[in-house]
View: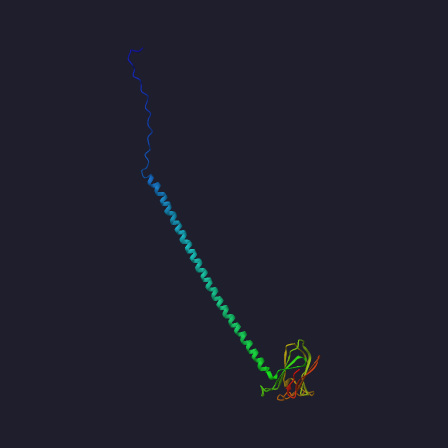
Amino acid sequence: MSDGRKVPERSAPQQQQPQRTVTNPNARAISAARPAAASAEKKGSEKQVSQRLKSEASNVFLNALSIIKEKVQELREQDNFFKYKAGIIGGWALVSVLSIVIACPGQGIETTALGARVTLLPNADKPTANPSLTVTNTDTEPWENVVFVVNGKYSTRTIPKIDAGSIFTVTPRLLANNAGTPMPPDERFYQAEMRTDDGKAELVREGQPLTQ
């Protein structure tokens, strides 16, 4: 039973407010510092890569320059070798031409039958030379079974072949008469003829080479 007094109403329990976690006041500063540090690290890495690339490029350039110098030196040595070789060949060619000119003076060169070109010594250019008869086959075909007869009594042994363009020199030591007596070394060639399978050709008459 109620005695007429009012019972005070209980108030509803108050809801507790959630406690806020206090954050680190330096958190913002650390968060802002990290991008700066990462950026600096990235720049340092890029700088190292750049320096490395420059170093590699420098090495490549130096190596290429060294190779080029070696090749240039080889080329110079090769050029010197070619020049030296060309000089030898040129000198040899000059000596050969001079030898032909000396051995075949203009007044002693004649062309006879069968395409024989003759040089007779001694001649006006070489009056004291040892007697000899040089014959060049200017024909396109070889001479076969060749015999040279000099002064009507001395002859050579049979020469099987004288090729086209070849030169053959007859000297007294290659000549002998029918008795086997050699031609005197100081006897001149006053008369000479050449006999082959294709016929014969007079080469010298009265001490003078004959023209065709």
